[in-house]
Image (cartoon, rainbow, N blue to C red; front, side):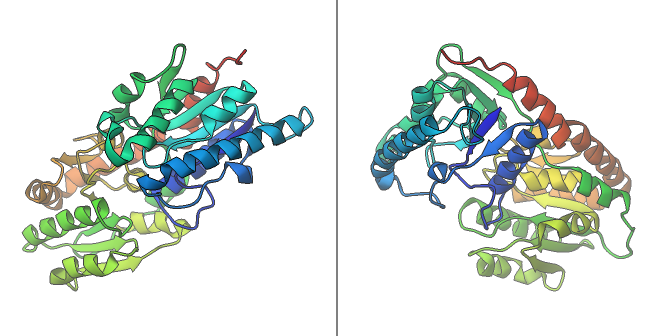
Length: 372
């Protein structure tokens, strides 16, 4: 098929690193792996960043004009032209950045419409978020197939689907090969266990995760450990201040090139992330693929990527005391760390590698029927 990939939240070529960007890139690779020709026309792109709710009416009006131009361009192209797409494929649709274009274009052209990772929250139906919320409902009413990545989205999405539409599961995934290779060449080190965390340094949920992490470090200060924190962003100064009491144990690596991450994960002994309001966490998969057991907060889709007691330990969300207790348990028990580490790498390779995701995607796309 010729697929238009629409990424309202963040395109694959965004210069800003994040899990959303990595998922967009991963879906692009999956589609190409399956032999589909992918196009991302300029008219399907949206401005970066999350717009304030009071701009949504203007965005909806602008989307109608862009959709009309996309439809006109499509109809002007000869049959078989690589940009004459026959499937609209949207990654991420939620009230803050809905898919304004997909329902309009697919209805006009009579082509199938797929969304990966949609969310529907009834509490957003009133107040300043109502226009974005209604746009999500229009998209879910028009879509043929929703591929759900986060289990907490299942019920809300299912309630808004139109007749004949399907919702199927797509496991969160990464290209596990470089991380598993790094795990296989891990060199044991002397000295205290190395704890590692990877996360954007921005306000709200990410900052709150770092606060929980700092609270856990305070309760663990009498045990031997070192920590490496990877990431950067506007809240870095505040996060460095949170970690200042633990200097020189805590080292900040800043933003690290993606190709350097596998070896960095493999140099550590344990991965930590409190995961405040985390959707599922691509870094959690990367760490496990590199052979790290995980301690994380039990929130959102995290239990779908970290098997509690199998590949890591999950704790109540925001509970620094419980988080510290889980870390202490693994610091004190190297054999348990080794057991979880082996299971983590094997589990990601079996269930969350791109090859497994490609099979799931191929099966899901096979359920689509041509619109009449």
